[in-house]
Every structure is written in structure tokens, then in C-alpha cells.
Image (cartoon, rainbow, N blue to C red):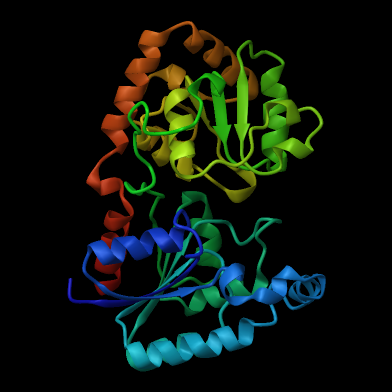
Length: 343
């Protein structure tokens, strides 16, 4: 592809969406300029109490936000890309959109969270929505909200997998101790709705549970199951070697699926997924015991599956067959974005 693209997204670590799209751009031989908008990269003031206080009163904008936007405007003018891709909820100055229009660049957003949730609420970003040429949302449930907020074009574009990060590791390639991996695992942060869900799940669950992610250790009832945050090869090893992975969505975020929906099969893991229309569409032909509707239903199905290894292996193989394809990579997602923007 003979295109130039600017990506505005997190690139401080390789598992962030901005970083994955950057690798996808390289694979497609695009001329790419990446602007890392992670706090670690552009906002050192966030390390300090005074900086975080300013961030709160300034509408989720750190001290460096104004100079960051000025540098972004200058890059758009200099680089003259056809597309500017912003990943996630990040407020921008109006001058950024004006400059895109001036040089003939389409500015689009790959929206991975709900800007109306309590955790992610960002009024400036919501005001920006009508200025984007396209919004690509990972949540079908957000479409009416985005249209009501003035978005010109909204497309559903789900999460994906990155073969560099999400892969099956042969025995011996990871140094993580297999014997320490519990029967059933949830990899993800301790959101409030997840804490309630897992506490209810434990009333009927008979196996060993593992919780991998931030803040589980801070909950008195669940800290005994916390194994900390896992990345890279350790993440792949846990997902592949536990007997069942819980594919729980974040209700406050309007999720119908999550990043784990793709990453679990990509790592060769067995997944049991929350029963949503998006999961049903994604895992067509998956057995009924591969979906759950409540904590009690999940506990019953996990208890049954732990006694049925043949059925678990069938789920693992079917998940790989359905998900691990070129069409479900971030390269494919970037191709889709460029094709729809180009119409």
C-alpha cells in the first residue's frame, strides 16, 4: 500500500493498541509516524501529586497536553498523511481536526472503551466526536450513543489478535511454572462488577481459581486467588495451560466481547464466554456449555467441564479454528479502516 498514516496511541509497551496498529502498518509497508500519547511518554507531570491534581480539574488533560497538541498539528502539516488514526479515548484540540482538513487527511478513531462510563468519562472527547470522519467502535451497543453525539459515520470493528504477542508457546519455551496455574483463570483487572461476579461465582465453584490482573489483591475476599499482572510469554503460558479461561465482558463499558475473546484461542486456550450477541456471532457453532449467563451458570458449567477433558479439548480446537485467522489480526483491522475511509 502506497499510503502514509499517522497513529496517535499508546506505544510505551508492545501490548497497547497503538503499538499493535503500528506493527500492522509496518507489515502493510505503510509510511507511518506514531505519536505516543501515553502519560509515560509525553506527560511526566503525572508522576507528581500536583500534576495529577491539575489533570483532574483540567478535564483529564495533563500540563503537557497543549504542547502535545501543538506538536501533533505540526507533524500533520509536515508529514501530509492520508489518514490520522487515533486509538481510544483521547481529547484533542480543534486545531488538530482543522489541520487534518487543511492537508486533506481523514481523521478516524478506533474506540476501545465507552466515553460515557464512569471510569472513562471525558466530555472533551465527546465534543470531539462530530469532528471525526469515522468512528470505528469495538462495541455495537455504543452505536446509538455515538450517532446521537453527532458522529458522522460509525462502524463496528471488533478487537483482534496480534501474532507477535498472542501465540501458543511449546512446552519448555516459557519459564513459568505450569504446576502453579489454577484450573480456571480470569485474566483482567478487578473492576467493581467483576468483583461482585467472581464472589458470586465462588459460592458454587468446586475447582481452583486464579485471578491475573491489577487490584485483585486489594479485595479481602479475593486476594487469596490473586496472582498479579501477567504479560508476554507468561500471559500466553497461563492462558494455554489453565483448564478453562473465563471470557467475562465489562458491563460498565458496554462490552459485547473483549480483547480476551481473541487472545484466548490465539494462545491455544480453552475459553468459556459470557453469553452476548457478539460472542454468539464470533463463536458460531460453539457448544452451549461454552457460554454462560450468570455467576451460578458459569460455576455449574466450569464444574462440569473440569470433569470432561474431551469436551474441553473440542472447545479449544474449535476456538482456534474460528478465531486464529488472518482476518482476525490487527493487520486486517487496519486494512478495513483504510478501505472504509477511502470510499
